[in-house]
Amino acid sequence: MWTRRLNVKQIAILTAAALFLAASAASQDSSDRPPWARKPKPKKTTTSTSTSTTPENTSPPEPVNKDNRDSNSNEEPAQQGRIRVSVNLVNVLVSVLDDNNRPAPDLPVEAFQLFEEGVQQKIVVFESETKQPLDIALMIDASLSAHKEISFEQQAAAHFIAQVLRPEDHLSVFAFDENVKQIAGFSDNVKVLQNAVQKIPDGSGTSIYDALVLGSGALERRKEDRRRVIILVTDGGETTSRSDFEAARKAAVRANTLLYSIIVRPVKNESGRNTAGEHAIETITDTTGGAIFFPDTAQDLDIIFDRIDRELRTQYRLGYYPNPRGPVNTYRSIQVKVLDNYKVRHRKTYLTGPQ
Image (cartoon, rainbow, N blue to C red; front, side, top):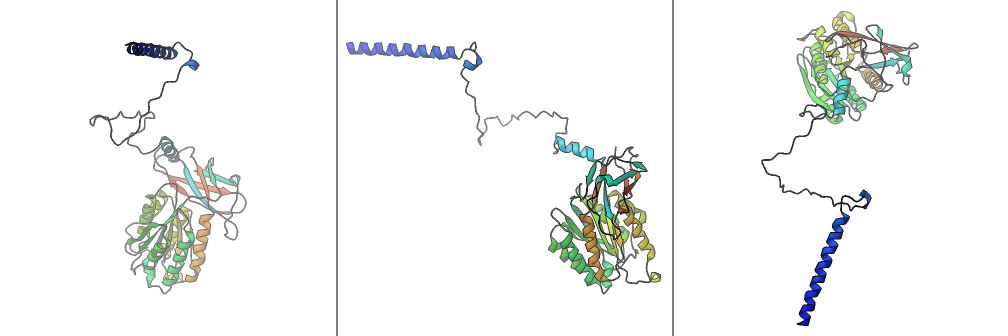
């Protein structure tokens, strides 16, 4: 009996002690204590599991659109800003050559002056050897297949493909006769592109203007911030195009295409050639800032392709914001001057876009 009473007493003492400790802990968490003396409250943590406790018909709240962007847009605010700025930026690729037609590298920005409609502009972008990737449309006249030198031309083109393509560069092979056909799409696969050059079919007729229109259109659909180049290999005898000279010139200017033309003349005597076609190609080539070549023999093609490759790797890139801006959808003239006696090639005009 005494033992049971002692046990009851012990239980009562233990209960009283527990109540005292609980009261003491509560007083320590009191909000009237200074912050440094309060016990930190344990943080509630949530873990992600495959089973959600959210009701199926309840959707989470939509995020706040703080910068007034279109909620369907995939662009980050910084990207949108860059796009808005670059719309007005005019890029000009410039080839600078010495008296021996060799590229003149490493000139400082102070050596350049840039004018639009005769008004000097401030150069805000300058690259002495631009690293912008290349998109190249290699367009070969299928009527050349009738020439005995066609094998040299194919070999030279295949060598150029292997030589010119660097990481991030892409090239496409086109053939044109009465029609324009894309033999290989834009790719960096050298073997595939070289095989495409070897598979250019025999053709009759020569649609140079159509080739320039379609080639420029294909390049214009490529990504921005890339150099757009057409390399045209033809005999210069325009015969079957549906497009005319002005349509071809405008397409090249609108796409900001750099045109390099290689005129393979089966007949050296002017009386037997389509010199009007040659002059038309020369005019379009000059407008874009490219170069035109007249190889004396098919073996000269390797040298010409080497020159084009070297020039593409040593181009200067100048950028400016036009001041004043021209009206929408108008052609504006560009002039670049370089100090000393260097020869300069660049595009002569551009088409203004939206304000």
